Length: 189
Ligand SMILES: C[S@@+](CC[C@H](N)C(=O)[O-])C[C@H]1O[C@@H](n2cnc3c(N)ncnc32)[C@H](O)[C@@H]1O
Image 1: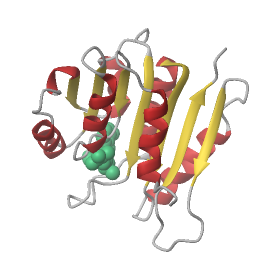
Image 2: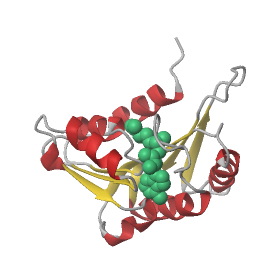
Image 3: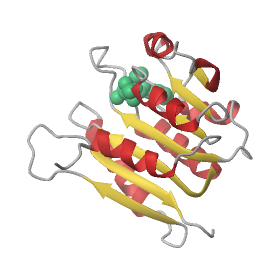
């Protein structure tokens, strides 16, 4: 059966992640991606996770108590400020965004195109060759379409000599299922 965008994002990450890798969860939410990443990168890797809501950090911390917490840093700050805590010369193997609002929470707190774009640029500066930056874009809410447009435009304009970009979506489903983008840095850039 075809994988959902969410499931496929993990498949794409699993293909490349190895023990010792440093990775970014740009939208921590309930912590599912953070836990998944922590499991992939082993004891010697590191996950940097960001969210602007305390409840996201609390939910994520609870899920991490099984010996994974020492390989994860949780930041209560916007992903657009990641440059304050991750040095520019720190190689990053992968990053993931789930854009939209935190399920079962305040639907007014959404990711925004301007700050998402800054964070994407910051991650790409650190991404290693063969590294992947994945965006799973939920866009059915107010403001969601503008963010989708920004992501699409940003991805379309990335130079072919340096990046490959994949777009994965179901085109016959109702209720605007999420759309996935995967930016892969080419080997020699
Ligand atoms: C769709 S949810 C993420 C779901 C999450 N990946 C999970 O596994 O549960 C989007 C999250 O982005 C967060 N968010 C909104 N603006 C943000 C920003 N500027 N920086 C980091 N996180 C932000 C929201 O608080 C929300 O928790």
